[in-house]
Amino acid sequence: MKIVVTLDMDFELLRKQKQELINMTFKDDGTNELLEGVLCILDAIQDSAVDNNGIDAKLVFGEDSDED
Image (tube, rainbow, N blue to C red; front, side, top):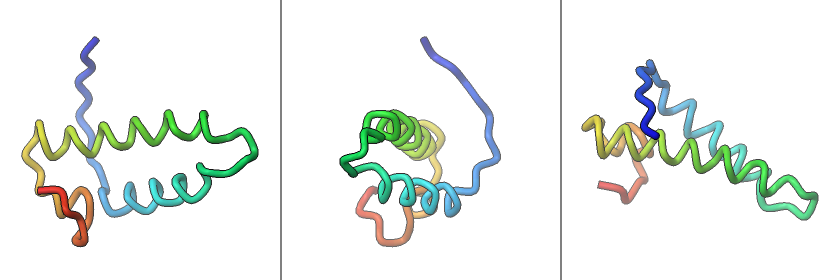
């Protein structure tokens, strides 16, 4: 299934929010599986922005990104 969504995305805020989720994810309290699904969605949004929509990888992933 393919879903097309148009978003006005704040990629800097998305990176910060994603990092907060990553910081929460790898704990032994049973939340890993739940948060990993959300992280996969955020990864897909970022990848699609770069790969399918031609947005600069540095804007999407940050200045220290090695994605090009």
